Amino acid sequence: MPAITGLGHVALKVKDVERSLAFYRDVMQFPEMMRLHHDDGSLFLIYLRITDTQYLELFPDGVDDTAPGPDHTGMHHFCLTIDVIEQTVDQIVARGGIPCAWTTENGTSALRPVDKPVITDGLDGNRQSWLQDPDGNRIELMEMAPDCLQMQAIRKLKDM
Image (cartoon, rainbow, N blue to C red; front, side, top):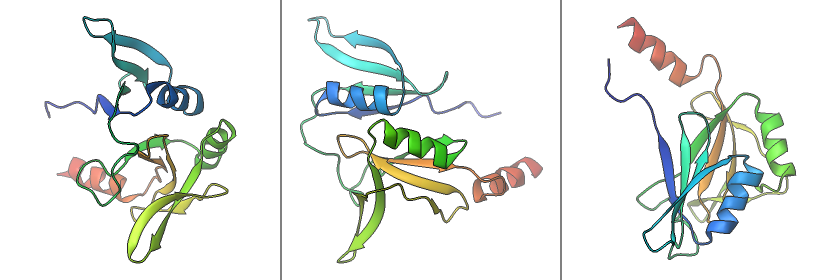
């Protein structure tokens, strides 16, 4: 049995922690669990609940205005799995989330805001839709199909 049992949290350095907190708490509906402070009382991080075993940490005082673009080394995006993509995306947009879609201009791919949600089939056989947080971090919303490539690979691993 593997020693690693799951992904515990994603930690984001954000420019404006209150703006990011409003997005993740109010738009994405991740409840605030706690805040940790430095010895001088200044904010160290805000801990938000995604599930009972997965969390999002927001660290204040990021130095850049936006996250690095998708071609930069580092985190490309993070993905949240959901049950019913249309319903979830519509609810997020109704709460103020801005739908995005991948576009290519001059050979460069970028995630850009669009007027209404775009739901596509990914190369892995799952349905997906995209948005960005206030700092430009890319977020994939994914509805996993029963016979997607990930599920096929899991079945193969279990059969070994």
